[in-house]
Each structure stands twice: as C-alpha cells, then as structure tokens.
Length: 71
Image (cartoon, rainbow, N blue to C red; front, side, top):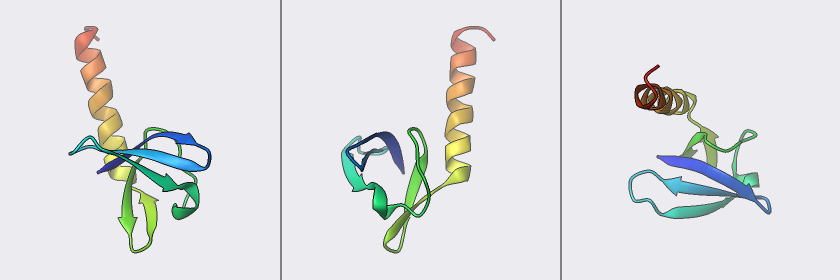
C-alpha cells in the first residue's frame, strides 16, 4: 500500500506502508487529483486513489486518537 505523504515540485512523495521506503511519483502519473494522506494503488501505468483503503486508514487513525485521549 502506498500512502501520499506530501507533494513537492509536482512529485508525490509516497511511503510504502510495508517497507517504509519512499517513492517519488510524478503527479501526472495519477488519474485523479491527489492530496496528502490518500492511499494509492497502481493500475496498469497510472496510480489511482484507493478510496476504501483511505477511509479504513483514516478510521483506524481516528479510533487510535480517540483511545489515546479517552473519547
């Protein structure tokens, strides 16, 4: 799973969630507009947002924060 960490100079700096390695991908390689925090997957020669994985990741982070702060 690749997660967009940030966008710099028309490059999406992505982090592989398994290896922790970073990968610079040109913004033009994405089929949609992207932003920090989205999960992307490669489909043929383009990268696409994985909306289900993005929402699941956000929910898991929200749940973790709530458990830390007692909400």
